[in-house]
Length: 184
Image 1 (cartoon, rainbow, N blue to C red):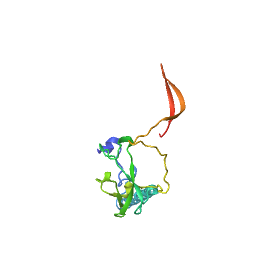
Image 2: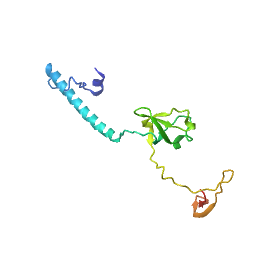
Image 3: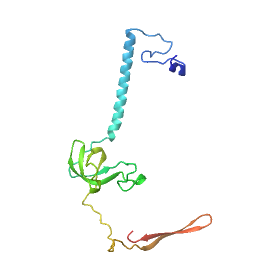
Image 4: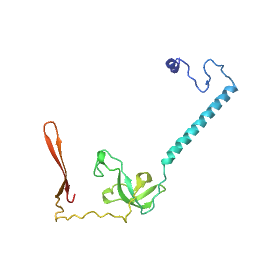
């Protein structure tokens, strides 16, 4: 007995025998015609399902094109044991940059102007690893200026106490103070 029949206690219904058990078996050209109709029905339903899923996928898909001179971020993938971008693990950056596009190499490849520290990496990248930088160079925020000493240090001091709190544990209490610091 076949494994299917041993497992489920009935014979397997294959495309040649789609009739229920106990029904009259069709032989000859009628069987071929019925089987081809069932195959056409299956193909039509598969096509409908594929069109539906293609519609869902294409809603999120977009064609990216960049101009020469645009600035883009470069997606980095984590390499095991290599700290190429200063941090590793949970806090490692997903994108580095922004870098300027020098020229378009192909329909989906761009050459970037990489800094000296990334000179060992090939400078042509696929569009899937690039993300457009949306910053406006005209809107530069100026931070507060900090007076630096000749040895490139600065003095940081408390300005005022913002909050006081006492953390109580089982047998001791810890005083907590929140302070506003200058140049911090």
